[in-house]
Image 1 (tube, rainbow, N blue to C red):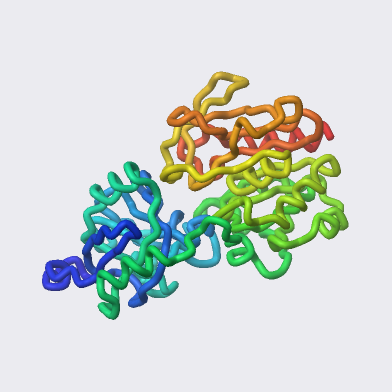
Image 2 (cartoon, one colour; image 1 turned 135 degrees about the horizontal axis):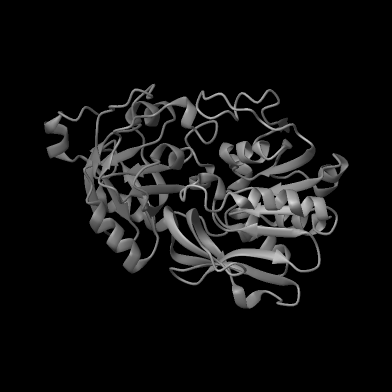
Length: 384
């Protein structure tokens, strides 16, 4: 949608309906398709392309709290996966592209990947509502084919993400080796000398981000990515030096096969997990997970390393957390906590080589605060 299309912007024919009856109007800038989604907000000032292409946002409508979106456009080099995965996108002001690196506009990419989007919305009011009342189920209507009353009803009736396994929906369908030539790991066309690979890693794809794979490769790891439902037996048959459990969408407790596989792998091979992988390992250790009121979505969350006392600025995207009271302190140590709400951000097993973090060290918001975690994975493998 061109910025100067004032008639469409004034008309605000598109709208977002929430399960509690709230309706926010705007205009469509994405695909002409109505759909459901869980409405969350992201506090990042930038990075909307990385957000939209993060498979962890599958099933969600992402509301950007930054009011000006779209200026930097989109480009293939900044994708975090093979496509855009968010169910929908909500912003205050949709701006035209002004960036030499862009190969398309935000609207172009949204339409290409069939993602509906709402601009001109009161994102400040929506964010306040989500913080006060919690995450909402929503229905985004951009076609005009559904009334407000019917949209609210559809939002109420939608099953939402609780109890839903989305990991198998976004995962790859067959194993593959990540970037054997090193071309995809090099930074944005800049010449980069990668270290030789001396460790063989198997990474579970529950919605893995490419920058995680780049980070593992930069630490000398040759990574084979496997689908979410790959059995622990088949993974061990590949004789890996370590196993990585990736980020991913929706409810960790619903991904029962992954919990079983994580439990079977621990003690057999060193294991690292990020985000959903962290939650799955917490469950595999006998813990429980619970839904946060409005989740953690942004690139400015402070996390304290309890061992060093240092504070890391982190990128996060999750709606569930591991319950600290459900863990056996004789088996599992809490290594990191969120300074905003005290939730668990890191765990390490005391008896077998396993550690995991809730946040995303590969996103580099600090920009390098948590990058040491990939080197720690190498150290863990070396000690096993």
